[in-house]
Image (cartoon, rainbow, N blue to C red; front, side):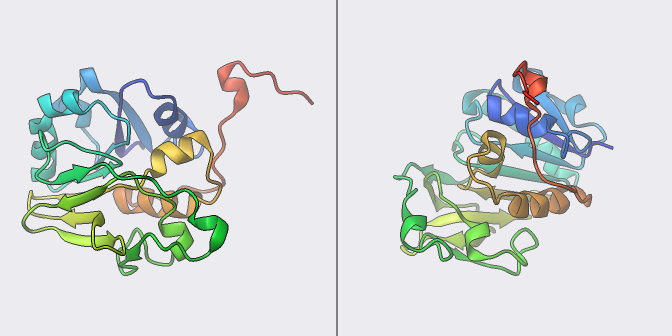
Length: 216
């Protein structure tokens, strides 16, 4: 049974992620311009991926906070907007080179490995690169990951009734485009934390689903 909604505005990686065989029975795509209270009926959690339409989300922010007030979970990745979230996200250069020098020890994060999403992960599995930083977060939020300079990568709060988790990582987008091959570890933890269900097997995007010829 699908327990997780994923806001969708036409981005390819969002679609391939949610419809992949590994996750298609767990995730419901919700087109952002159709997003309302009824979209979340029977769902336990909501994912808001990187490269989302921030203006459209801001117009529907009450739907998100009403969902949280019911004790549900919301996961936000990548960027966000102060028009709908009580935190300040700022753009920063993305470090995609650290792994060349020290592939098993990313120098870009200090992580609380007691959090359920990160428990049992290696440093490399917990942070591949970040898209910006949070320079402020909600008043009762707790930082889960920080950069060496103290800027916030990931934070969590229960002050809205449910659990709101935000990160400048981009596991949905990167998994969807299959550029980083070890994201099953992070995403499987995330899916279980959001829904209580375990996804099994490796992530795969069947080429034939997109009209790509598969030679034998």
